[in-house]
Image (cartoon, rainbow, N blue to C red; front, side, top):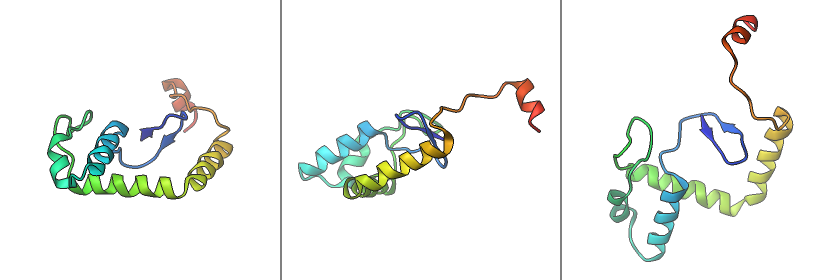
Length: 104
């Protein structure tokens, strides 16, 4: 699960491209560099592939997601608001072992 700044979690595979990496890619793309030229300079900061380069496909996926967020910001905000309303806008806390055994 990925932790996002509003204190909620997104299910699914953790992202390889961080916000800092995306900012670097966007800045260098604006200067005319291709993704293939930028990709070897990026390094994954955490996880199993820490220290390795993200794939070119991962960089392109991050660019597409960024474009979607930029094109439809109201949809992103509405999705966050809907999720917060469903969960009561509280950050889930880890269950203790005793609590986990009683909920089964």
